[in-house]
Image (cartoon, rainbow over all chains, first blue to last red; front, side):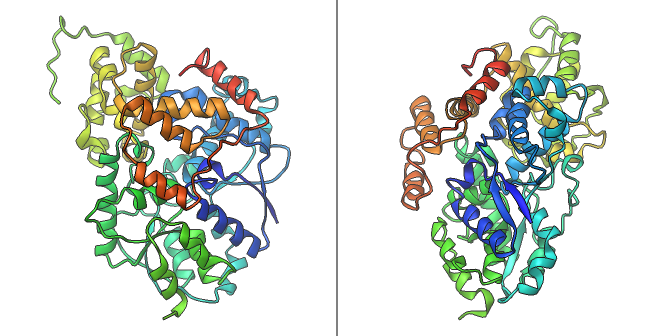
Length: 283
Length: 188
């Protein structure tokens, strides 16, 4: 099976381990990924915060590049995923579509609107049969499943899991042999794109999330968003628990014992060496 | 924040309500001030006007206070308010529409968040993709906060997570054209 891959800017930079692990997991499962040719940035929070049309036209260009291939797009970054979905929906709206198509320079907007966009979580849930029997080293870790915002909201746009009580990531972690902990931060915001402009506020939110996860007994936080991953590591207040944060693909890689899986840990600012050693029953 | 609206200091303009309605696509008259949006907002404690109060300002047509508010600029876009509104209002979309209108009218007081958004978008206009090192350098120079995040930046660079040079798209002209068509010129 083949998918188009939209890594987004973060996976080429601060979330390198998310990119490496996503590619490795897909390769391991026989899912071929081909980058969307010449993809551009989706505009992220800054575009939708200040310019509605721009925030839809930028991801619409990406959908236009993907259209015609007949392939689904996999977007591991939760923000990219959300923006691509938003553009796809807007391109289906007869009132909005012409303006967006013109702004994005899209010759065939209906084709672009038909491109299906998946998060990595959706992909792994859909392809469960391919990996479930291949879990070689059940993780045996207590994990806080952190959905954050953009994998579950807005519910009408994504419609993949329940907005207030999502379970898909918890179930996936259980399948990997981990024990998901019950904690209150599952769908709370890390501060997202305000990290550079208002580190003070983002530190507050991240400190609270880390504290909650640690008190619930988690040894590691599982995320599927590069901004959550970065903020929880980089904006950890000095006295907050130094809980490692792993991308869900890294955990899949560890459980499936994929080559190189333990090497991804070195890219983290908070070393996950302790949990990667313990994962799968290691000493 | 408490605001006393009197006609002289804050002229009320019903057209403003209609303008935000059409810009956001949200029927703001549906809001009955239940405060659920504010209760779930992770940034409310730092805002001058909480989300439900901002909506009230818009309902009243208090254009000046609404567009000069810095609350919307602290919105992280997490969508909790929108997911929980009992009347199905996309509150976070209203926050964005208010920011966009504030920018258009030159009333915006978004501070560092606004500066960051402008530099972030300008980077995409130039390169087609975001380049963190350029983004951070330009933000530091513009904000005057030269030392902030220096250590984090270096740690990320040592781990090979900060590509020194931006990737230039083949189609970066088409990306710049999107900016020209949506921003009417290209400069922020």
